[in-house]
Image (cartoon, rainbow, N blue to C red; front, side):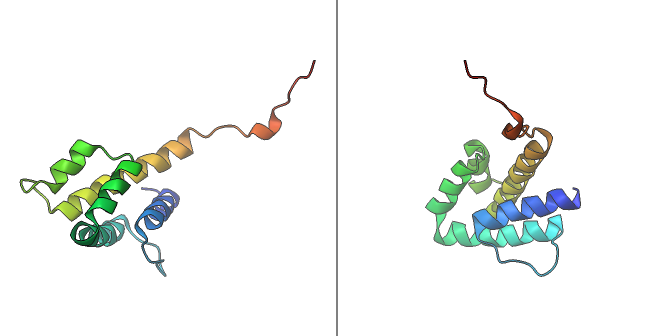
Length: 111
């Protein structure tokens, strides 16, 4: 992942998950660990908030349910953190590759 896109992804995730500002740039692995820890806390103490956040972030409900299942291959916090990270990476990619042109150049024709 490009550094700039990683920084944008970190910013999105930090905003939604109230992560502390880091003195140095995070790697994707470090971000995943921080996010996993925060999600573990939310699962234990604020599950409804977490589920609401998953809905707001447009993360597939079936994938979240599989991650929370006792039959999941990974711990729930790690599986959900990966879902969040992938979704936010998609958002950054979409914003970068499908930018709208500025509306400042548009002129209205009046009759």
